[in-house]
Amino acid sequence: MDINSTFLTYICFLIKYFLFFTSIDHNKQDGVVIKNFIVTHHHNLVAAIALIAFSVVVLCSFDSGQAMVQDSVNIKNEIIPDSLLEKSPTENNYRLSGSILPNEGFTNSLIAVDGISIGHAMEISNALRFHVDFRFLKAGEEFKVVYDSTKTNVIEFEFKPDVVTTHKLTKDPEGNYEYEKISLPVETRNRFLTGKIETTLNQALLDCDIPVSTSQEINGILECVVNFRTDARLGDQFTVFMEEYYFEGHKLSGGKIHYVSYSGRRSGFHEAFRFDDTDPLSAYNAHYTKDGKALIHSALRLPVDKIHVTSTFGQRRHPVTGKRSFHSGVDYRGHIGDPVYAVAKGKVIYSGYDKLNGNKVVIKHSDGTKTYYIHLDKSLVKKGQTVKARQQIAKLGRTGRVTGPHLHFGIKDNKGKWANPLLKRMIATPKLTGEKYARFLTQIEEIDQKVHEFKEKNKLFSITSL
Ligand SMILES: [Zn+2]
Image 1 (cartoon, rainbow, N blue to C red):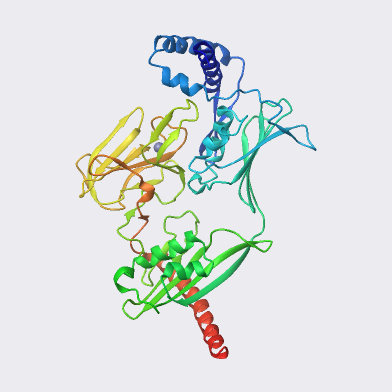
Image 2: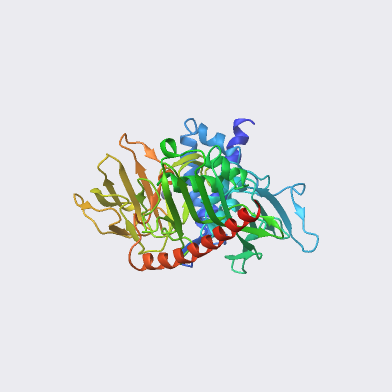
């Protein structure tokens, strides 16, 4: 491609995105802002002025702008070739399908499909990110974009993370997306496992056809109470009580572990129970000992009450510019005013405002780690103040350059390097207390009874099978 056509492509790209940006329409829905791509005539003048100004900047910086121009080559045309589109057999519309790519985010997986424009990809992911936790995307999960008869407007979008779940977006006459979750009935089956360790616990679990992720979770829980390296012995016994999900006879991935126990000559007897808070996204959903101690090693306290990650840590391709950028933390979705907590005790070294970050608090911890809390509605602490773990330090907000209310949370290690907060183990509390502990005790009783029934049956079975 010669430099002129590359430049022309770039100008076309600019026109497209200035039209897009000058026409962003903010609509409040569920307390979040959803962007909609509505191009109206009175925006054209603004777009033209912006385009001229931007073109001058680009022309002046054309030499140094080489990298940007390179990126623009990947930008796709808005007119979708007929060869790519699949015509609906019943309605007058067209569709494009694709799936989540390994190690790519949602938007990038959309953009990777021939025919899906960056603008459309962004419009869809902005509408969906408040309903789907992008942290749990898996490669191969399928999606479908439906275009109207003109082949230029998205009218429907479907994301199917598994055979029983469909997240559906439908455009209403005003151009706003309406969200709907379609769930097919799933059968829940309880599963009890018990056995003797012949090689390792991990192997024993895999032999029982437990998926790797579940076996890792079980190991993670038990590692808090059993030192496998020194105290595990062949012949040690384990028991697991979990839920598995089935659709039309087929087992779905995932499952909920209600109970795990481990008993050994050297390790002694240990058990863990899952606490189910009323909200499935509650930060308190985790495994605890009978007296309410959280089974997570040296954990930080979560900075929010609800775990809803809308953007993860690391390198990613910017949906508009196509340029690679680095996201230095995690974004937790929330509502304006939600409490924001210190993840560990420390000293406030910054509490202030700037245009990009909005209200921001930085805390330095005893090991030299610093934690960053950004886009806050209001800071409740002052520079120099010491804070306790899980002390409320601010209110969640949407200040600075953001599209909706969320907490951007970052961790810088003692060498000044950004660390991935999602790789740190985080809990709401090291110990359940009060009303939550009371509810936990009721749940323990129910679990205990089921485990007891199973053990009795198992005992009978082993006797009769002798
Ligand atoms: Zn962020």
